[in-house]
Image 1 (cartoon, one colour):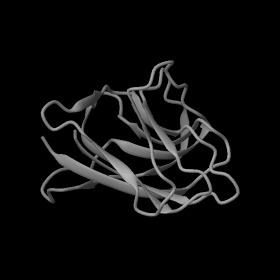
Image 2 (cartoon, rainbow, N blue to C red):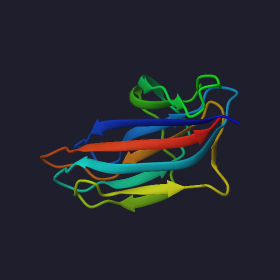
Image 3 (cartoon, rainbow, N blue to C red):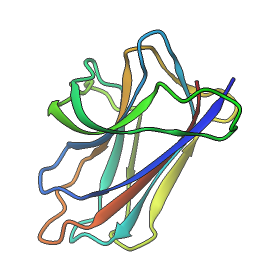
Amino acid sequence: MPRYTVAATKAGVNTANTIMWQMRAAAGSYIRLVELAVSVATAPTTGPSWRLNRPTAIGTSTATVTPQTEDVDVAAAVTRLDTTWSAAPTLAATDARIYATPNAIGSGIVWTWYDRPYRVPGSGGLCLVNGNAAGATLGLFAIYCIFDE
């Protein structure tokens, strides 16, 4: 099973409960998420409160990041990291994880699922949401994901 990595940065937002990123599985392909980390690259006025949420609808993405393979002998990933949408994903009523991060450069969280990967089904997604508005200074946030496909 091939392993992939994807990373991105994104400016904060001034609307609470904004979807920042979505790991989106292609039709017919599962994501087996092993690790997801998010950190503060440039401090915002208000520290983020990260919510990991499996959406009920994945929305329509308008910008994506293509993962890189960790083994050069395997095919390119079909999974994408969505960064913007013309129609945002519809979040589920219950979050899978919640973690509040201090508004200091370098602070963050690493979620791991080494013993049993977090599965995202084909045509499904997993959203990382900032539950707090950033305030006057938006800051910059960084994410990386390690997954098998």
